[in-house]
Length: 363
Image (cartoon, rainbow, N blue to C red; front, side, top):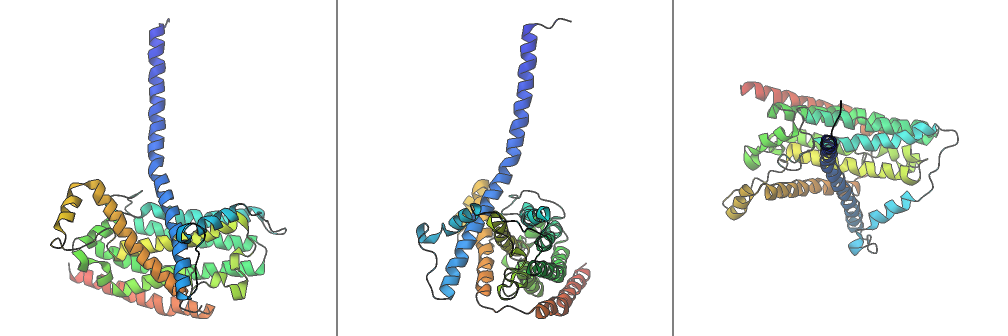
């Protein structure tokens, strides 16, 4: 069978075109992921800068001021310093688990961002089980901390890992019950559907007003899940040196540092989505009618405004978490577990029963 030169050229050009289409589809698939990662990185840098500025204001001292304008590049300078530091390994520890632990902690939190709607249909993966996927994935982070504590072959590190696991189990249950109450009201588990269910009724339709008990329990449980003061028992400096990260240095220590702020940001975003109407502003049209006309006409403008509104609400709760850290003293371990099991768990169960009863009566 003889194939002419023109036919060969046609076949080659066709195969080249198919290859280019595949490359283009892969690049187009990676664009939203890389955009999200870049946005998260910037968000974490802003949180680190805000924490230093707010803590300086609370303690009446001068915060970072030399690295960039207003010290905004200080977090970047610290990250660069950690990147170039020597990576030490414990001589009698498990080096493979020692390296895997920080990665599990960071990756499990990063995956949670995939189900967060930053604006209307501006979401990486709008899944029908969005909120429970977040709870399932985020529960893997304490496993990474426990692995790190065990692999360090250090009693302080192991105690910190055990505390992280105990704290996570204690506060995940009330957190899940609060999310279940929200999903009962919205009759959906998708994060986008939960926001849209709130936006139907405007400002007073936010779950903050419909689920005030659940909101308080969710806020306390979120702070405990982030392991921030007054719930930072796993890394209590006065008791455990630095807890599960005692033996870590260099970039691995930096990963724990990043994981802490990633967790704070994702928790604040979920507070916004579940209780504050997400991207919904809910301002009556009579105040700024021209603004809403533009918002209706342009989808891109509406998306940008939605992202802006979501971030404003999110950083409000970041501010509350930072102010709480520098205001309240640390709890003891028994007080922390008592608060989770004896107070928040019964309250969240009662809230779930009330929500279920009201939903049944409204049928």
